[in-house]
Image (cartoon, rainbow over all chains, first blue to last red; front, side, top):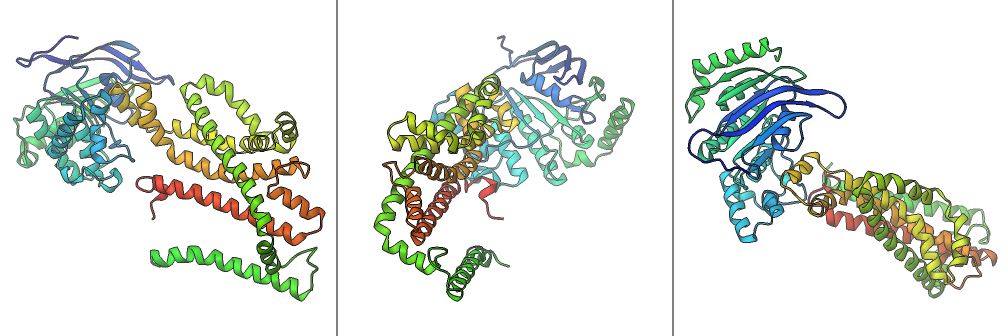
Length: 254
Length: 262
């Protein structure tokens, strides 16, 4: 495994000529070429069933593509946040967050400190001993993010993580995610249905065409960070949303 | 209606029905002067239960031990089989038809063979009752071990969990609600299996469970005792089911939807 140095732009993930056909014969992805730079916040947007989730699962190494090659720089430090919180309902929040460390066999004392830190970072310190069902949807998602953070990921894959949440909670979690991303500089691959969310969080948005999914267009969001609600209300934000909308229309994605 | 009155009506409503039925039964028997060798009244059954308690309680102990041993065997064998089944679809497909075969063969038909082959009556009866109680444990536990959240399975894979880690940290806890559903069914079946096997073993057997008392009482036209033994069997079945339900509730109450009061 080759190490990537922290200085200078480097490639976090590379997909070359990746195509995928599901076991049931559905063509999910068609010759996707993708170069993800380190510490980039890259978002995929497109209609349902366009292969966004498949792309993410291939990037995670959960699915081997039918064709093409995948190169990940940080094999061991990849975390995945799913569409739903995907917590173990029988385990307390702290236990859920500790899971990746336990599976890796990390020593207990080290584990406790890292779990406490991750929970504190997402504002769930007071809920370490709660059961998942006792938390709201937004809090469950925070716990899920804490579980991803606990392994100090270099690559964070998020598959419509806030899709099931209400607009207000989603907006708040978007901001918190951006803060985290700025602080930790992990590479983020983010999948969403929401144009507004895509423009707000991303450094680059890729528009995917309907099945079989391919990358139809690219929009670079070069707005500096930190971004706040001022950005959301700016004329520039509206213009970027409009630009993305027309790209999606042209790609047949909207 | 508040939760409190709900809970009380949950107990009181069926209890009321029971009292009404028993009073009606006693009334019919008294009014029409039905002879006790045809239908004994509930009061006479209760009196017989007390009078014959030493005899009946000894038999109850025999039947209960057979049922409990069979239930234990069914749980151990059923869970072990389920573990084997989930290791590979090929193994499950090869063995499942035989598990089904075991389930659909009437125990009355094979009990005589088992009783001939196994000389000791107690193990023979336990084997019969185990066969009756086994299938729900296999079927439910297998289903449970397979009913794992896909996302959690992906999470375990991404974190390079070993087969054992996935089994014990994910599949086993996920399977618990299904396991207990099986246990509730099997607890009753183990008793039914025990009683049926005792019947087949007949009065010639040395074991003297409740079925033996029913057979004997029938032959002697001691119908009140027959009814008393029947009441004991029913009560035992209810008690076994209640124990299985309590165990399920104690284990799952913190997190599983089935045990969380609406």
